[in-house]
Image (cartoon, rainbow, N blue to C red; front, side, top):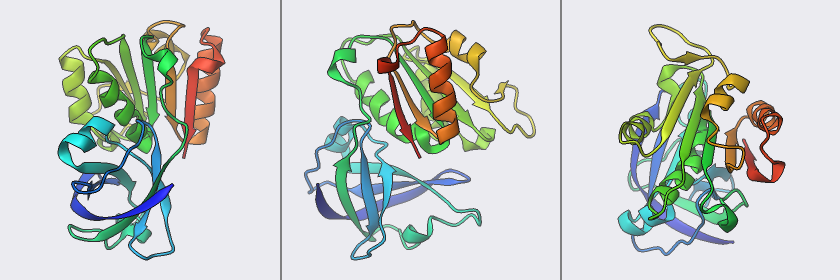
Length: 233
């Protein structure tokens, strides 16, 4: 793995608890596979943390921007090790690393992406990478968040669903206020509805309890373990 130093191009809120960190790679070659991660920290700082890349490789080549979805802490401020991140701030990026990616043998099988919270980041990278290809299998996305405001990339996902490019299920585990969608955690009935077929490849990313629970339910529904790809945070 190599380390590069890049500047922050833009920082924007994604949800009340997350920020989109856009890093400027316009003059820095950086090859990675959809689903991989990087270690990130302020330039010259010893403190670095892993973040999954939310951009697809083709997006970085086209725009020169590598996007990360960064959590904020319980006080509502950015992650302490990136508290100074603002346009122009220098960031050290080490990587890429990780084996969470879609294997070539699954290029033409149906896909069921399953995300919890910020686990949507690497799944978005995989999704955008797959949608750019000429031959598309059936693609379903199931996304669980604490509240309706905690769905990152909500408008983008909604637009894809309206256009018929994906089928989308959103579920809220701690609903408050006027939420008229699905409530509760990802359960067997939701998976049964969303699963394109038992031959589907099912990448899952989220908290350990979600990943373990959903993996077990998929096996019960007939999905072979080798078709279940997991990443925990």
